[in-house]
Image (cartoon, rainbow, N blue to C red; front, side):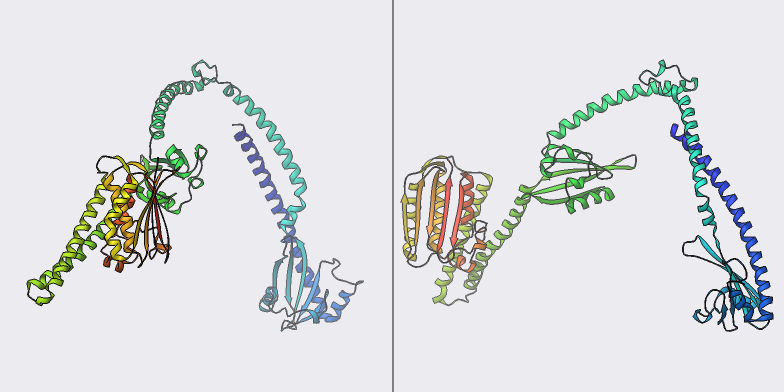
Length: 558
């Protein structure tokens, strides 16, 4: 209230001073300007008579310092010929001056007999008045004078104006302070905690009663709001999903622990712009889209995890209050979905290939298009492709069981014994390929599924034999160290290029598809090895060099 009173009085005084200044300055300037214009015309008329009588001699006499006319050094006479050429000037040599035919006052004098104009200086504090008069001989005589503008007049009066204004401001401030203090003293002493106990202006009684009622309502609402806030915080604190609430300007209103971990921030981000928490373009666009359309979704990769953000607009009574952002970790779901699509596509392809071969051979046999001596070849193809199909189906069923965690009961098994059994099963195949197969090491007991572990070592050795070279070798070594039991399978085969080493455990992935099909592989052997290792919580590691061979180790934890 004090400020309002002070501003009102100061504004009134300032407006009065400005009005007086404008009126006085305008009146003085108008009077001065009119008088000087009239005087300038009289001086021009007298000078014109002199020029018409004496010609240039008259002007030359005026140029003499002792006989200069008019007496004021501010006056200047210029004589212009009919073509605009300057014939004579009392200030500068005529030959150094440019043509004046385009000057407004000169054109007007040639046209109407008399002319005039005003031109301002670049600072706007000085102007020059010009009056021109046509002479009987067709020439024009012009007189000019410099004078101060209204701005210069105001600037010359600036000091007294400032002094008066300062005095008015000081007086206004003193008066406003005294009046405001007297008026608001009872208001400053109001006890709003006990509104009805105040002894103040009678006019305030309805207001004080209303304040008392509102205090009761506010206290009740605060208690209810505090209870709901506590309930909301308890719920959001225990959520696994990230929750962030933003106002309509993007300021963080609330962020739960899961969201703080996700964005790598703390509680200090509350009441700050969300851009200080996350600068992701995708999330920013999702927030803007939710504000416009009501809802949006986006998936973003964070620290190797795939996070889905659901953003929804918050409204109340048709007004947008902000947005709420929910973050879900959908990594497993996304991986499962991708794996399912890839697996379905690969299975369809892998099943289709042998089936087409079987159907083609059978169709040729059925239609009698095969010579009798070629029948064994076609029936052999049907048998081989059928066996490949059965092996593929068995591997698919086995992988499905591993994915679902379906397995026989665990038991204590010796990895060295299992390695020996697997090597014995592959001995004939190794001899046929000219590959030496050996088993070395010590007994190593692990708790696991015997059939799974046998298949794991069998598949590793089978791969080492299939992709080996003539007179190569496959070595199986079993050991037990500080890290646990370990099975190591080393071969001298063709090796795996570095760009494929991270993918060899994927389902249906083959480094050399032509060689894999020729060797009868299904593309699932190493994938089964990986799943069996994961089932037993074992770590699997692969090192390979092209042309030198591959080493695969599986370490079982204690």
